[in-house]
Length: 230
Ligand SMILES: N[C@@H](CCC(=O)N[C@@H](CS)C(=O)NCC(=O)O)C(=O)O
Image (cartoon, rainbow, N blue to C red; front, side):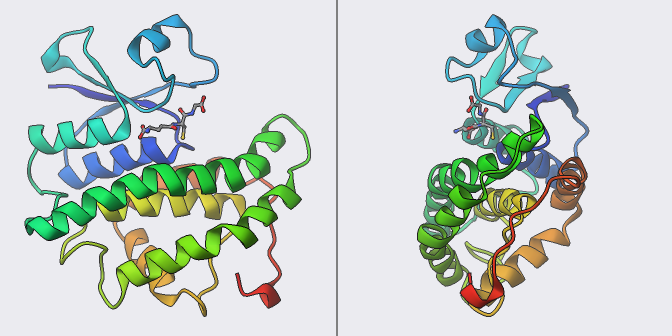
């Protein structure tokens, strides 16, 4: 079996799958795939033209699976241990919901609202759109932080006693906010900050995260006035 994950290290969805496979302790290959530059074969593999993609040699050379959620649950079935899905049914349902919430609301608010206006212009030698990003940090992100803060509560992980798909999906999205320069206030959202630190101690997450952090090291970060308590 050779699993190959295609994408870019800056993509939270790509790192979601790298973290999962690292948790499984399996060897796998990676392939650089830039969704903005890929050719027609990318459209054939995924008409939505989004990364990541997964290739699995067990299924033949033409087999390719798009979408981080489809890939994640495919891998869970193929390599069940250690499981990243809660054993308890209620927790399992919550984990699927939080994966969906992270992949949609967090991804669009953090990615399109903050990461892109800060990082993308700089990749083309232009100035970041700091005002646009700050507007999203002020108007949309606090309510998301409140929701995740309450979902964590006094627990280590979002859904039950073990690290799960929910934790990975949420953490990779907050990581991209940090690459753009925004880290939620530790006074206002202490559970969220403690959660991010806890996730950061796992090698499965930290290894791809550090690679991405290095790639964005030179980016001029967003600065938020501490007085705003954001
Ligand atoms: N629902 C998809 C979303 C993937 C996604 O949006 N990937 C971004 C990179 S982080 C992408 O490929 N964007 C290309 C574009 O916007 O054209 C998943 O879970 O894989």
